[in-house]
Structures are given as structure tokens and as C-alpha cells.
Image (cartoon, rainbow, N blue to C red; front, side, top):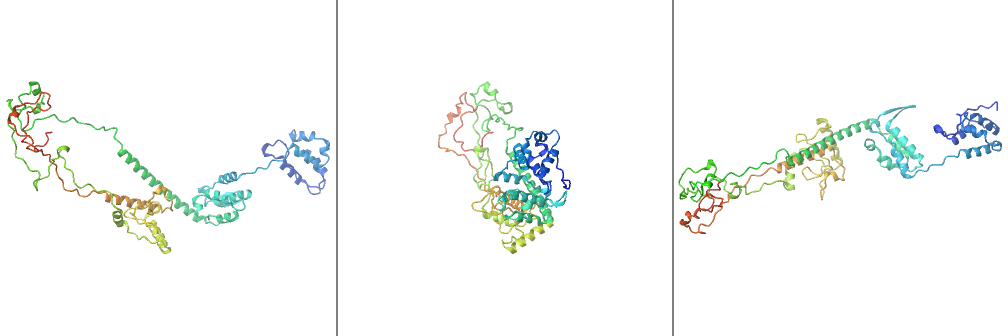
Length: 464
């Protein structure tokens, strides 16, 4: 034993503290001996490896001599005192949860990360860690790949395949992605997110303003004014004789009659004006609506799909290429030139229209703003199942739709105004001059005598 070189192991406590596993410690203890070591060498050196005043030292001191006779008996007694840990079997759901816990942050993509033994790209380091963990779960055929791809950031996911046969292929595919491509993709994604946030803020502000304008005002309640007091018509110069002094004084001072005689005067009929004579000026002759005349042609709003298409055609100043390889190349060139001229984050308008994606519907065709397709039945952008168009094209289609709706909502020229005259039959009741002397009953609202029936229609208009 004097010629053997033995590497001392950390002291053995046997209390499971600080991550100590007795089974692992015993294996390392056996490996520290050379092949030429005897069982007596291992048994005699074990006492020196026990920490002083530890559970391991107490156990060794009280161990029977029979358990110290051979190394096999000693190992059996050791396993009784410190059993081998049970193996933990993970379910498929637990394996997926552990893979989800390995998160790749977007700021780590395309960035070099310093390590103890060198440097490595952040996304490559993540791919290696995921692949090693999946291989440790004995997933040799990539059954857990769908969980990893769902947890992959969008910037990196666009450069990866949808399926891999082995985790080695998955790791190699991530390693070959250029860091410069990832950085440019991150910039484009940040720009699109900023545009979507601006659009969402604008839509939210529009909805809030509309709610405020439609809600009833709490600070300015509607005020109602009392109707004006009754006044005498120009056909009579004063109240009838049957009106008492109290009733006569109840008339407002501004409308007191100027003649003292209580005798009713003969009505003075002024020269009538024929409202139906051609060429006469329009007058407010509707008795039931305060003399207001209304147009006979209703205001036209909205418009047919053909009207939408014709109105939107004036904004289609950029060629809409067909859905072919040549058309797609021309469209990509259009988008590149537009972004170079107007900035990547510019918002389209009527002065700078945005190119339309090949295969989509024309603008103004009541299409979905998210995918640019006019389907039957139509669908809304929030439930669109198709691939979305660029955010600038979505904004351009929304802008054209508002412009077309605003143009078609302009009211047309109103039709000719016509007045309605209330006319009664003059022969319905014969004229009785003696009835002119009969006063109204005292409870009547009108302070006038009975009016002859030979004055009909609304010639004088209501007395306001």
C-alpha cells in the first residue's frame, strides 16, 4: 500500500446536508483506489474519510466486526444504512413543462454571450440546452419538438423548419442561421409592433370619442321654455263683451287692446295669397310642424358595391400585380421602393398609397383589412383565418374604405319643397250672422266670440 497513490475524497458526513448523496460518495471512494488495492486497504482507509463527530463516524464505530470482515459485507451494511435513491420517472407532461422552462429571451437572439469556457451566440446556446435535455428524456425521434417550436420566439421561428427527425438536425439548423439576418428581422418586428400599437391607440381614441359624443350631456341639461301667451288675432280689435273685467285684466299688458268699445268688430279679411300659384316664393305653411317645409327626396347615404368600386378606383394609382412569380418579385420591389422613399414606419395616405399584395382583392371591394381578401360570406379582421398582409397595406385599405364611405355618405341635392295646406269645406256649416253675437262660455280658453265659418283654411297661419 505504500507504493499506491490514492486521491483523498471529501470527508463523509452521512447527514445528506449540502447535497451530499452517500451512494455517490461511496462510488467515488472506490474509484479513488488503484486496481491493485486490496479490500483491507479500502476497509482501513474508510474510517479516516469519515468526518469527526459525524453520523458516519458513529455508525462505523458501532458496526459489528462481521460487517467489517470483507468489502462486500461492508457495502451491504452501508446500503442498509444509506439506501440507494429511488429513480424518478417523469411523465410526458412533466417533460414538456421542463422544456418550456428553458426560455429564450428575444434580446438574446443574435447576441454573443460570454461563458466560462468561451463565447457563444445566445440562440445557439439555447438550442444546445434544449437538445441535451430532450435527449436526456430519451426522446430520440423528436416527439417533444412541438413544445419547443411553440416556445420559440417569432424572430427565430421564421428561419426554422416545421419538422426535424433528430435533435442533432434541430441544433445544426439553429447554428447555421446568420446573426445579421436575425438582427434585421428583430428591427422589422419592432417596427411592425410599433405600427400596430399606434393603430390600436388611434382606434381606441376614436371609439372613446364616439362614446363621449353619443352619451347624453350631464352638465348641459335640456331646457324647456313655456309656450308664449295667447294673443288676439288681427281680425279682432278687442275681447268680446261677455268677458268679465277679471278676464280682461288677466291678458298680458303687452297685448292689451287699444279700443275701449266692447262691441265685437266685423272681421276684416285681408287679401289672400294663393300658395299654389306657380312662381310664388316658398313659405312655411305646414300647420302641424311650425310652418317648416321638408324635402320630398330623402337623403341618400351609403352606396352599392359598384359605387364603392368606382369611387375607390381613383386611389388605385399603383399597379396591382398578379399572383405569379413575376408578380411577387415586382411587388417586393414596390414595397422596397416605398419603404426607401417614405421610411419603414411611415403611414400610407392618399398622397403615398401602399402597394397591394398579389392575389388579394382590389381596394374598396369590402374586403378584409387583415388579409385583403373579399370572401363570401364576408368576415371581419379579428376573426380572419388567412395570412395577414403587411401592416402598411392594412392601414391603406382602412384609409381608402373611410374615404369612400365619406364620399358616398355626402347627401344629394334635396328635391323640390312642397307645402301642405289645411283646407276645410266652406259649405259644411252655413253662415249665421246672429251667432256672431253669442259669446264664448266663461270656461273657454279663447277670449273671442264665435268665428264665422266663411273663413277657412290656414290663410292666416297659427297665432304664435
